[in-house]
Length: 311
Image (cartoon, rainbow, N blue to C red):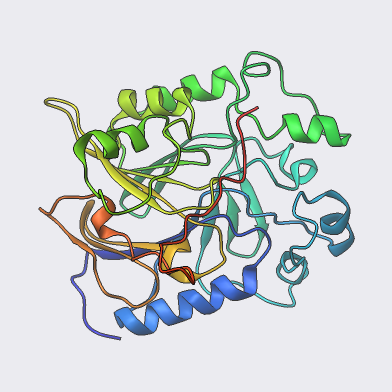
């Protein structure tokens, strides 16, 4: 491993894992080899599906065909090589997570951050909000998930959780599952990538967007919609929030995102596991940092389909 400044930190982020722990571990191995250094810790933006038992995964997981690989980590057969911190999405083992609203360790070095809050990881201040927006349930109490219906409701954030995160300040990273509303429209207005097909401008939710506009985190990481996206949200006289939306764990080019910090300041960032930086401190952040979409047989770029509508 190459020598790095003493206060240097390499953070990797993962899109929706959906139970595919083996492949993301291999991807992180490749990233470390490419960067010539260890990944200090990993952040996952929800829909991890950390089911302790394989039969639970098959019975309860929304993605029935997904592998039940976390059971091996929970049982000690395997161990993650780097500390993993994750938030909840709308497809999780909510029965196991219900009694850990403030987070906990589900397997050695696999940490659930909790439903909402602020955590210091190394030198970084990381705020987080689990779940997606469901207007009908945002002001209803959270019930113990004892049925498929109450488990689904557990994947929605509530007003007190949003308010808890909204009170955070001086935030380096904000982890949310669902996109902030309006980021696609921002890219359209600025004509950041006229040649790139853009997703629907209605993707995401307004609550998360208001949260970003209130907290002004330096970076926002999100998943849920299974497509990559990048845009900067700027407010006059306030910190620019650089948003990186990650794909599900289907291919590393868009499901893995990494940031290299010196102290609390990001110096470079990149997509995938090649180790090549697509952004350096001082440069503009946006869609031009994304890897090019894979071509379809007719020569057009592929446009993934949104997988989850807001309830």
